[in-house]
Image 1 (cartoon, helix red, strand yellow):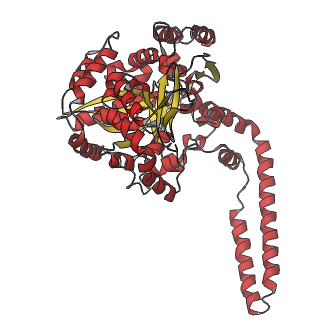
Image 2 (cartoon, helix red, strand yellow; image 1 turned 135 degrees about the vertical axis):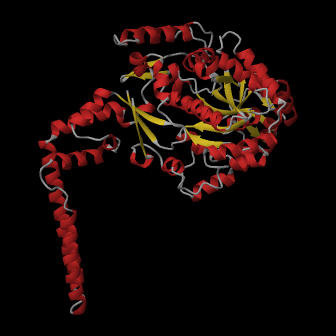
Length: 531
């Protein structure tokens, strides 16, 4: 395998915010604690130590033990769970929805980023312990977002009429997907193994949370990863006071205004608009938003109603029924974990930056926010074809229209760039305008019109010549674009479409190590890995 790192601004498909955040070029000082680096993560340990309630550690260790009751742990995992009870232990966390068979590749990159950063920190600051955490978004209710995965351009979808939090979905009907996938998987070295993995995790689990835990555990158990499902009473009991604060004071809605205003001033899009109450209520197989009414509160479907006193009593008695939304979940996570860094994708980085002022209002330490590794896995055969076509990796990562124009100029024997001609024309008219200004200034309008006409003429000739040359070299250009389409399916980066099984069928479980060993969580660049 070989690795090449490329600045995000040279890769098609990344937002302005992510490009500027990764390069530390934007003015983010009001929106973050510190930019992610080893030194700043060390500082974060001190910040977190000052206001984390170490009494939570015992409850955390006990609950993790319960959740892993029927899963065989590695020695490293057992050690990491025990270490969480120690005041010198800190976590680095990522989280994700319970995508079928992990969904797109970036699911894998997020976890690898967490594991690698923990290893870096452990090596650099050995007097502390660092435990990698995967936080399962088991309370999510958007089934359509997670019920599918793509393999070599084909989509496999699990259909179900169940409603409510997806983590509790039963897996009775999922065997149809496995059978369909098994027929499709080619006769590759590890085809049988990926099907066995699929069956082991999904056919031997009672619900989607359990199957996801098994799958992620098999892929990352040797790295000491600890998986947490926070959808339970024991952990939410720790969080009751903050839930009540959100109900009473609309904390996220009111306190995020400062950070959102700053993002607006910097011309960044707001990723997630806060609601007045950023909580759902889980009951009878449904997850409904909580809204405030004139005389109290109710769920969005109107089936559950409370007075202020009643809802506070319900929070105390049944905290597991109160479910944080995308903006309140970070507060829950950071409240109960001794966490120093959250690693997320570009969209997550964007909405976390809305929350620093919320954390400050709660006297809660805002973690270091790190963009996960982004990568392209490049098959060696495809790379060899690109080399024969005289196309670099940097070029294949360009937007398609820019790439096509570059290829025409590359393959043509003619000089297709009329920039110098247009500049010469502009210079000539500038001299004419100087003369006109000294004689008849009314003549300048005619000169401007003539200049525009001639520049437009050159641009039209340039375009016609480009189109002609594109037709001449269309076969080579088509081959390049076919390769790009495999790396950018439907014009979208590979990591957002392709499932890890595409690469697992050729590499087996070893693919995790192959990728892991070629990614630096603090590179702040896009990685290209040849496999």
